[in-house]
Length: 390
Ligand code: APR
Ligand code: PHB
Image 1 (cartoon, rainbow, N blue to C red):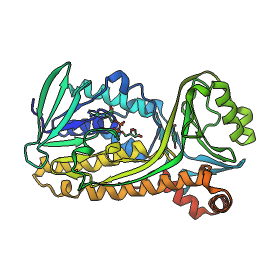
Image 2 (image 1 turned 180 degrees about the horizontal axis):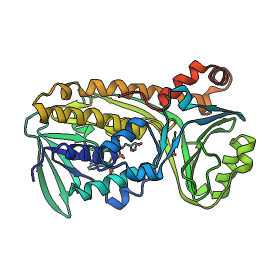
Image 3 (image 1 turned 90 degrees about the vertical axis):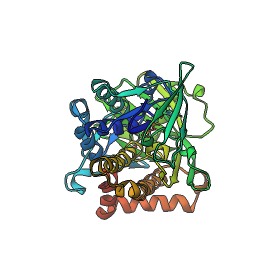
Image 4 (image 1 turned 120 degrees about the vertical axis):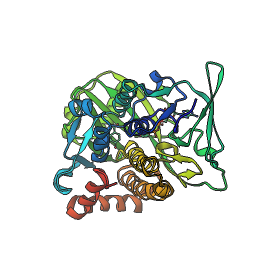
C-alpha cells in the first residue's frame, strides 16, 4: 500500500491530522494498535480551548460539539474553603472554553473519517518505521498474523507516550526533560448532576480535588491520591466522603453522589522530548510530551501540534516548499513549553506536596492570596487557561 502521510496512532492527534489533510487533498493512512472499542472506551479530560474548537469546525467535525458541549466563561478556585471565580471571559476580552469530553471528540473524528472513506487500520501490531532519513520512508506492521508494508512520503508519530515513533529517533539525538510528581489523581465518572455549573479546582489540607463534568447529568470528579494507592481500596462511599471533605462547605452540602461508572488512577508527569522531527518523521501530541492534567492542556497541546504540522504539510504539498516542515519542531516546542510551565504552575499551586511542610506551604498560600487579590495575576491565569494563540 502507498500513501502520502503514514500516521501512527489513532488517538485525537492522528485522527485530526488525517481529517485535516484529507480536506486538503493529501492522502494518509492511520495505523492504530488497539481496537476502536478500546480507543473509544478511554476517559480523558474534557476542556477545549477556542483554538481547538475552531480547528474542529474547520475540519467539519464541530456539529455535535456545538450542540452538546457547554461553553464555560469561568471557573472557581477554592483554597482551604475560600472560593474565588476566575472570570475567563471578562479577563481575556471575551474568550471562553468548551466543556466536551475527549472521548466524544475522538468518536466524532472516527465518524468523520468513516464518512469520507478514510483508512484507519486498527489492531495494527508491531508497527515499525524504516528509512526515515530518506525520501522514501516506509512502515511495516502486522495484522491478523499477516505482515504488511506501507510506503509513504512522511511519517507522523501520533502514537502517544508509549508509542514506537519517539523511540525511532536515535537516542543520541533525543533530549528528554521530565518531572514526575509525588502523587496521582483518582478519578470517578458518575451519572449525577455536577455540583456546580462551572469547574471547581480545590486545594485543601487533605490535598487537591477537582469538580468537573461532561454534561448536566454526567459528573467527573478527582481527588489527589498517593501513587501506591490501590483502586480496590476505594469504594464509591469512600471516594465521595473524601471528595466532600476537600470541598468548600456550600459545595460539600450540595454534592449529589451516585454509583461510579468509571474509576481510575492516573500518575502526574511533565515530559518533553526534543526535537519533534527526525528526517521524514514528525512527532505530535503525547508522543512528544505529557502534561499533568491540572489545567487540561493535554488534548489542547496535541491540537496545536497538529495545527502546525498540518500547515507545514499543506505548504509542502501545495507549493513544494519545506520551510514550515523544517521549522515545525522549534515552533511547536515554543508553545509546548508555555503549556508545560502553566500546567506545572497550576499543579504546584493547588496540590498538597509531601515535602512542602512549612516554608513551601506558606509560599503556596501567599501565591493564592496574590492571585485572588490581583487582577494582573488572574489575567495571566485566564489567558493561559483559554489557550495562548497559535
Ligand atoms: N502502533 C500504533 N498505534 C499505537 C502504538 C503503536 N506502536 N502505540 C500507541 N498507539 C496508539 C494508542 O493506542 C493510542 O490510541 O496511539 C494512540 C495515541 O493516542 P493518545 O495517547 O490519545 O495521544 P494523542 O492522540 O497524542 O492525544 C493526546 O490524549 O492521551 C491524551 O492526555 C492526552 O489529552 C491528550 C491527548
Ligand atoms: C476533566 O473534566 O476530566 C478535567 C477537567 C479539567 C482538568 C482536568 C480534567 O484540568
